[in-house]
Length: 224
Image 1 (cartoon, rainbow, N blue to C red):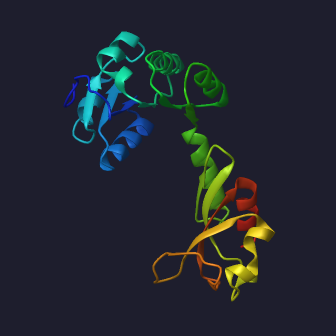
Image 2 (spheres, one colour):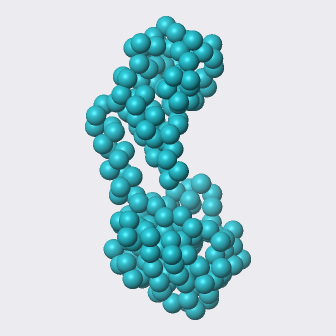
Image 3 (cartoon, rainbow, N blue to C red):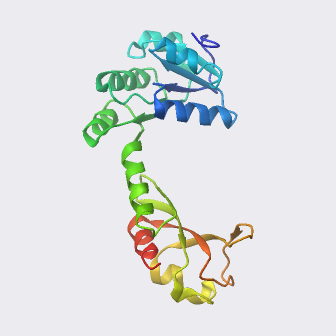
């Protein structure tokens, strides 16, 4: 058992399943100043994380009554990080939905798993392994230095300014009209990050933070 296993009126975010994904979410939320209740069936894992997550508890989250006693029904947000045990993942998501949790994020290991989670009450389904695979693929090509893809066909990426745009202002380059993406900001060697303006002059060594539809972001990055 971790620091505190009492039910709480929630500003607490519940994170269930303290594997690599769940632990990363729970520890990040804790560092950001949120109160987090981390739950796992593995007592050793719960004890190990008791100092880095606000509250930890060992429990079987497939049991709706157990979650009720932990105060899950009073919480508005929960993350189900169970991946390998499909049955536990689905039953936990269903239990949270039955308790009326309004914002359920659930990890899926494949599309079939994701569809089941959506049908059992998950409001947001994430595919961390697939997302990381896509991110690495883009970086391996050398066209993007970093890449984040969102569920609504939208992406943010860090890439270099195309040589054809060197010494042009963003306004003159008409990047939004020609390429359908937005240059959010620019980072130059030994200079601070600055937000992009129409009169910003581009240089070959500039790093651009760009955003837009995934296919257009990928197409623009290929210009480098």
